[in-house]
Image 1 (cartoon, rainbow, N blue to C red):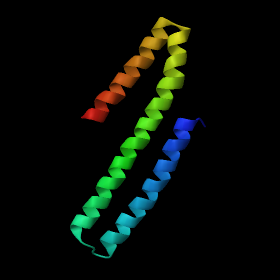
Image 2 (cartoon, rainbow, N blue to C red):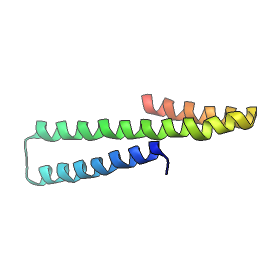
Image 3 (cartoon, rainbow, N blue to C red):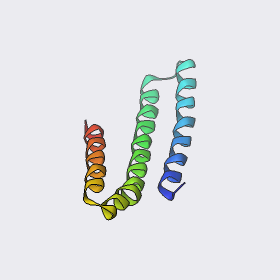
Image 4 (cartoon, rainbow, N blue to C red):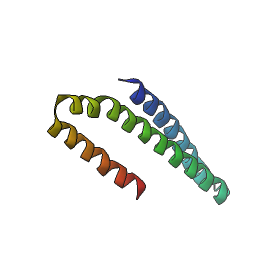
Length: 89
């Protein structure tokens, strides 16, 4: 696993802990604003993990595809554009 994926995995493990904590907060009928704040924190960390994965993909798979040939490179670029489009919606 490369560095970008390792960073993403660590963030996702943290999110897993956050989600478990959020579930516990819900079960304990904690204050809704506090729960919402924790949910937003988990969402932000998920977005950062996604950026780590995309960064890793661009620096390895996309770069290699571009170096190998125009059609492969173009295909990988289109994949990234599709993901970015989903990300900003």
